[in-house]
Image (cartoon, rainbow, N blue to C red; front, side):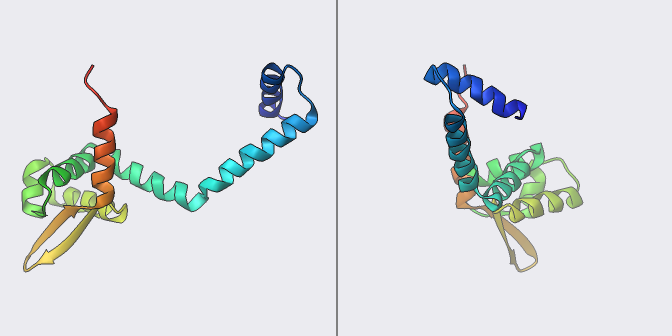
Length: 132
């Protein structure tokens, strides 16, 4: 029996006041069903989004684009973050790949806007992090 299963057995014994092998097996099946419901693809996609936001430059870009509620030119975004053009391009590419921003060519200019996903995430973060 693995250490995790033994610990689960002790927990169920405390909760049920008596734990049988069937109780442990039933709970392991329930937990396995919960894990399977997540789906590997869903977890991977969510981790890509969180990874994209885990960098100060990328997070700042998303916050600015959400606040702007409109498209901003890459030259405007470059004025907001202190990175090289190459660094900015890489950051925006990662945000596009994560589905947080959309970009389009407008003549010789490249413009970006926040996606609904970015707006939703920023809204959730605004509501969950309060000044104390």
